[in-house]
Every structure is written in structure tokens, then in C-alpha cells.
Image (cartoon, rainbow, N blue to C red; front, side, top):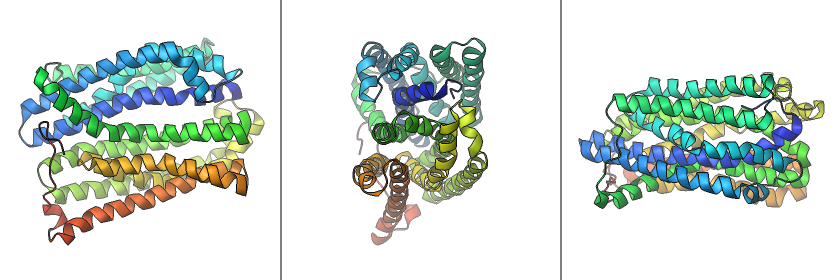
Length: 421
């Protein structure tokens, strides 16, 4: 969390953040894609196949680290302009993203290895790894930005160092368990890659979807509300993203159990796990909304905004809080779909939210109130997405019942490395 730069700094980070999020989403997608198949193959007693999935995931993370480092380092200016950076925001955003580009590998492996730890039964250690990285980020943010006054460069360094520590924790765990490997036969590379990427697109999309939404909101806000509107949303987006990460953590935490029960054909336990995930996520969603609502007048001050922007944050935040419980439903449903290899449904659920948001923003703001309707379009899209998620979940259950089978005894076809569905 980067604080203390004023309105211009916040706007610059909000513009550049989708690139950072894309890098981390790639790591999440590759790690989750490999870890889901790893868990399913282990549940079937196919340990060799499971190890191949760790190997291919590691090679893919290494390859994407090199590729994305090169692209961001040499093409950051056109990327930032495409995202809406201009004037004073462009050099600030470049200062930040250049440092981030040198730590791309740390971020991809930091987010990509943690899912394997969870699927090896190390949920507590995975949490420690991620919390340690987050705490390191906060400590170095304070030192670099407030004490040593390094500005954007210091904030970027803090982000990279935090992810680097998470990666070191993850590597230490996998080496201790004897599970880190890069060994895979050439004839297994293509089918293994296909399997990992096919499932990994869903968690990648789930991690990236809020940032696609962020880009859409920034572009429309620049037209209707200008730099101050982007600064307002920067504060709100940071707060909402914390809740989203908590909800994603619940979905990711339930994934090893869902994948295992799916591999074992134990659909009764699968449904029970999903039910617990729904209940816990909604509880945390409502609790988080209450905390943010009570403290809303202090949020802008935390980020060092002007008095005017802080007042706008306090007034606008409740609009976004309306959507949080619906986001919880969508995220848990999506996680359940890709954890049990219903990837097409997860794709639809993930990418329809930004599409709906774009359609609403093209139609509603010119007719009903400009910038304020930009905020409400975000809420409308997330509510509709949650309704669709519930409809999809009910449809899946009814399909089994119509075939004359109990949901918990369904014979939904499985994927494997040689014959992915």
C-alpha cells in the first residue's frame, strides 16, 4: 500500500497498477493452473504426473518472467499512455514501473509458488509467506517513502522486496519437501502446458478482472471527472482491493480441498466445502464493509490526499460498499468452478463483469449524471455478475438431477495431462 504522495502520486500509481497486477496475475494463473492439476493427480495416486505439473509450472513462470521483464522495460511508455497516463503523471508512472520491471521474476514466482504450498498441506506456511511479504512491503514503504523520501522509486522497491521475500519462503518450503523440480520429458511439455494454461486462465482472469475494471473506470473518470476523480477512485480501489484479496484468499484456500474431493469423486464433501466458503466470505464481506463505512472519513487522509478529495472519498465509498457482498458470491462461485475443472463457466463469470461495466458506462453516464453514474455502473455490473453466478451454480446442480443422478455422485468427466477436456 503506497501512501503519502498526494493526489498526483496516487493518480500515477492508479494508472500504472494494472501492469503490476498483470505481472502478479500471470504468476497466480500459472501457479494455480499447475497446483489444481497437481492436487487432482495426487488424489488419483498419480505422483509422477503431479511432479511433472510442478516442473512445467516452474518453466512457464521462468519463461514469462523473462518475457514480461523485457516488454515492460522497453515498452513502458506506450503502455502507460494507453492506460491514460499524460502530463505530470507519465514520468511518475515510469519511475515506478521501471523498478517493478526488474523485479518481475520475484513477483511471478512469489505469487506462483504459493498455490503449490497450499496443495501440499502447508496452508499456514503459505499464509505466513504472504503476510511476511505484505508486512515487508509496508515497512519498506514507510522507510523508503516517509523516512528516506525516495518517492515512487522507493515505493516500487518496497513492492519488489516484499514479493521477493514471499518467493524465498515458498522456495524454502518446496525444497524442504523435496517438491521443487524442473525435470520433465520433452514429449510431456505440450500436453502439460496445455493443461496448466487451460485451467490457469481462470485464476489469472479472476486476479486480473478487477484491474481491467480499474482501467475502464480510469479512462471514463478521466473524461468525466479528471485527475481528482482518478485520485478519489485510487483511495477507494486500494480499500476495496484489500477486501477482494481477503475474498480471493477464501476461494484459493478452499481450492485444494475442492480439487482433492473432485479427484476422489467425493461430491458431498465438495459441496460442504463450498458452502463453508460462501458463508465465511459473506461474513467477512459484511464485517469489512462495516469497518470501512465507519472509518470512511479518514481514508483519504491516510493516502495524503487534499481535503477536497478526502471529502469525495468519504461520500463515494458507500456506493462501492454496496457491491462487496455480491463480489464475495461471484469470487467463491468462480473459484469453485475452476477448482473442479468447469473452466468454461469460470471464464464466462470472470470476463463478463468488465464487459457489463463497459456497456453500462457507455450508455448510462451521458444520460443520468456523468461521474456519479460511473461509480454506480461498477456496482450494477457486480450485482448482475453475482446473479449470473448463482444462476450458473443452480444450473450445474439441476443438470445432474435431470440426468437422474444425485449431484454428489455425478460422473462429470475428468481432465488429465494426456486427454484434457
